[in-house]
Amino acid sequence: MVVDDDQGLLFSIRTALLSAGLPDPVLVSDSRQVGALVRSHCFHLVLLDLVMPHLDGMEVLKQIKAESPATECIIVTAVDEVAMAVQAMRFGAYDYLVKPLNLERTIIVIGHALERYQLRQGMALFERPQRFEDLKFPEKFAGMVARDESMALVFHQAEICAQSDYNVMITGETGVGKGMLARIIHQISSRSNGPFVAVNMPAFSNTLFEDDIFGHIRGAYTGAVSDKRGFFETAQGGTLFLDEITELAPAMQGKLLRVIEEKEFYRLGSTQIVNVDLRILSASNRNVSEAMTSGHLRRDLYFRLNEYHIHIPELRRRPKDILVLADRFLKLHARKNKKSIRQISFELSQALQQYDFPGNVRELENIVASAVLVETTDTLRLSSAQNLLVSSKPPLLRRDESFLSLDELQRRQILQALRLTSGNRTHAARMLGIGLRTLQRKLKSLDLDAPK
Image (cartoon, rainbow, N blue to C red; front, side, top):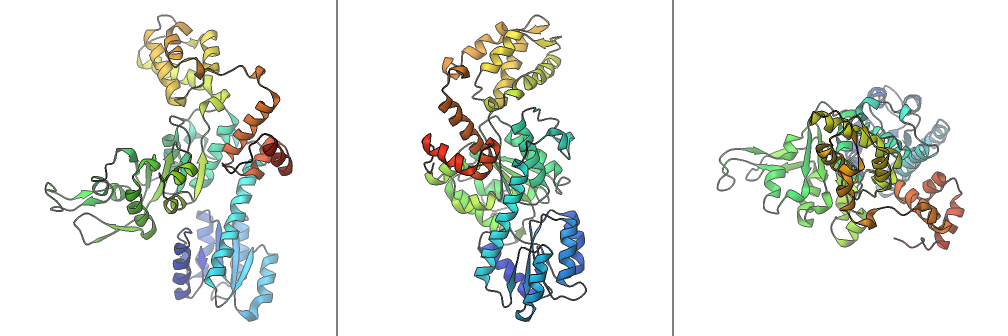
């Protein structure tokens, strides 16, 4: 949020922020509105003029810090008010800028403040194991069954980012539940009363992309006998979920980028601008860094979509979830098929816990659903699912961890921590219960210190 009674300066700062690839700020010219806005939204940063009518910057700063202590504040001041700006820093301001603003320096300071906010939020999440009991909206996650601590972290991240209007990128292997988590984020957000529109990006051809995304007017081309609303218009006021974004052709990604940046578009055949008011969630089963290197994902689009990142761990990394999910699917499909199967046998439970699940949660449900069809007793037995497990070939069965060397066990734990923290070594070290320097030494000794 940018607060200043000078409308010209507000728009100048907004233009500079957007040009630098930063989020579109809320612009406020009346300082009396700030308190209500901070109470109803989760602002990461406020750029605040010190001298304003009604409420001066110092009073507004105190309001912000009382309502939202985590929000970073940067004071904007005139040369002869620097002493007051320094005093404001004692009340919790991150830094101050002197008028006339040097926009390049302004962007740098804002960037540093946002980094500190993200770091503090991230460290707060990783400082201790997250608990399902501490969720604010546990009922929203009822459909996404989980018991593993790594998923508790994912759910807490979802709650945090849902309170903002930031675009969120969700990564994880096929079948881990990226689409389900995106829908939950929408349901918790301030846009929950608006539509949730999910779009499967690989389904688009280059010729149909613009028509499906932007829509057309009658007569735009042969066969366009009536007006058509595209996905952007359909999702107005709500959330647009772009699934498997890295599968969209780069040329089409460029058209998508323009709409996200300009917040407007034209229907095919029309000269009338349609304004965009929605939030974008996106997902990918690829490693996004590799996708950018290989050209599957434009870097500029990535920075627009990845204002917040959530990674969902693979099911094989969440051992506590396997049997809980299997039991849930057993009850669901037994009821659907009108069978009185009450439990899973010990042998099948053991086999499921040893299986790698390359298809993740989706594959687990398919295994249970198929086994329910052929089971004739009140217990789901290994014999009913044997072919489903064996058909995936022995290499997919996990090795006995007791035969792994200490180095290999350390390597796996370190890699898992780095995955869960999106490569942030400081956070990973905290998760592992070691110091950053110790982690760096282990990375080097285990040959894991390469840029990849």
